Length: 84
Image 1 (cartoon, one colour):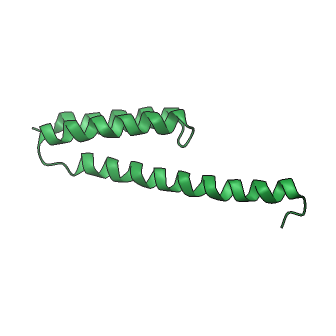
Image 2: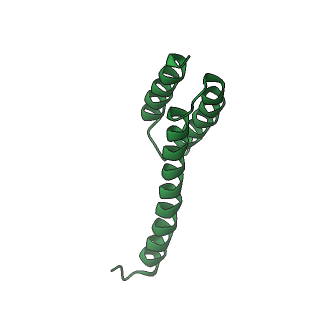
Image 3: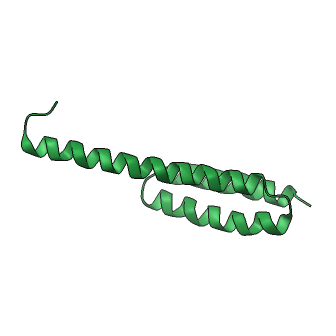
């Protein structure tokens, strides 16, 4: 355990940040799953739009790597285009 006061405060900040990031990553997984499980192409397209926006924001805030966001967006778009 840290002894210095600043280190103790830092531990608290890290804990809060970790919880927020964990929740955001969980939300991203849910959005991704919603796109994949969509039944119609129109429904999938609207859900893809929400997922792409969330992925871009997460990449901007360094929750996920920007290249991972690009890869996921590409794969999701491929799945939506494959629907008919």
